[in-house]
Amino acid sequence: MDCDLLIINGFIIDGTGKPGFYADLAISKGKIMGVASKLECTAGRIIDAFGLVVSPGFIDPHVHAELAVLTSGAFEDYLRQGVTTTINGNCGHSITPYSSDNIYRYMTTSGLISPEEEERYKRSVPAWNSFSSYIDTIKSRSTNLNMGFLLGHGSLRWSVMGKTNARTPNVEEYKELSRLIEEGMEQGALGLSTGLAYRPSKHAATDELIQLAKITQKYDGIYTSHLRTYLGILEAVKEAIQIGEAADIRVQISHLTPSCPEAFVEILTARNRGLEIAVDTIPKSSGHFKRWDRFLQFMLPSISQTYELNRNVLQDTDSAHKINRKLLKKIRFKDNLMVFHTADPEMERRTLKGIADEKRTAVDDLILQLLANNNPKLTFCQGGLNRWDFPGTPYPDDVAHNPLVMVGSDRIFGNLHDPYDWYELFRKGAFPIYFDLCKQKGLSLEEVIRRVTSFPAQQFRLKGRGVLAKGNAADIVILDPDHFRYPTNEEIDPLNPRTMASGVRYTIVNGNVVLDNGIVKEINAGQLLSRNGTIL
Image (cartoon, rainbow, N blue to C red; front, side, top):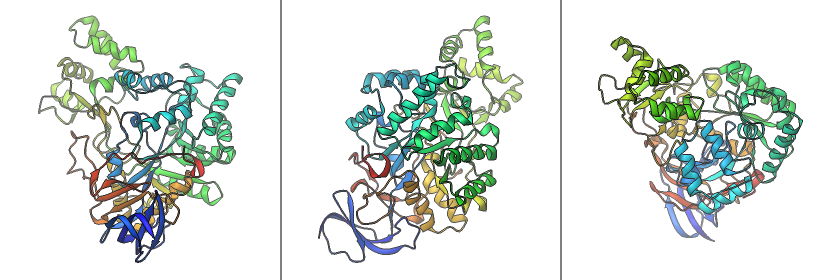
């Protein structure tokens, strides 16, 4: 037979969890033609995978690239991890409803993009006014990855109910929320996401979420949740399970901390009694590194207040300092903020509290002093170099051996025009870090790969993906498992947001070699995915 690409001599791990085997794999027209030993094929290209693992492309169920793809579809950091598909629109943040200008305003008001980015998007990206027209916008720009999208409860609620929404929706508002979910699902959305730890979704009662999840379920959609963590991790998981069982809908628990293993047990128990539920976790995370202007925008509740602080902070007047002190009081957890790019070696990489105590001054005074130096690179790190909730340390047994746990990077994109604007250190290595943590607990490579391929494909109804089998999409990663890694605490450079994973030789998306022996090619082979194998 003839084929476009033939992969020979590889150790095939097919994504099902079954033991691996040595075989060849043939690809034609973006599909897998066959997997067998010694395939006889006249190929346009041959890749010799001797000594390497050949597996389905990895699927990341928790990504926030819905705006990033409008700037760049390259996604090199994902390709170097072997990721071929991402699920976007998580935590209640999505690209509908109504106009693109409405979504930009929501994202800016929520601190997710800067006002400058909002204006840049408006100037450079074609406008959209529905889920389907947003999909058309991406098609006009293209992407290296396959992408699926959720509807964001936060975006929907904010758009329908306005900023003052610490209440239940009235009859007309509920009808509009329902209509918008139905419209988005009909146009190809994968489901509904929530961000219940912050406004506006935190104001939604459990019953509101159940009713909206029931609408999503009619279309075989999924309910994903950034939990209402202020209830306590276990109680928040129980609420998500309650919603899933009441609405009879699939549930994805987002970025669950391994510090609460009993919550993972609760999820497995719910699955065993019939609820189709799964969970993703961030293998390791630092805090958020934000340059001072982005940090203030994110931490202060009003954009206008941020601008007021920006204008006044350089003015050495009593009135300005009074305004600034009042605003700074609204910033929580200031003491443990670390500072970088201070231009003072004695302050560099230390907490504000430690510096202030040494200088015998107040933390707020220290912040004002740092800002008054007018250093454009001044950066605050909120959460430290290793976050307590995702420390990257060995998993408890109830987490490591739970078959329902997949990887979610929860990648922070910040400003793609300026990677130093807002970044995190370890999430670009989520997959190799997860592989290593599972290996430490004795899991087989076949089981780990199942959790990042066929399992998320099944959970999000991505039919025809996640398994190396004849007729399936040729999303494939070829990697060196002994060198699939990401820098450790000792190796990482906190001032370099461009660090990437190593060990992946080839990443193939729909039959196209996008990462080619370590070189990224902008072939833009990615497809936009809906439920049950539908390509948008």
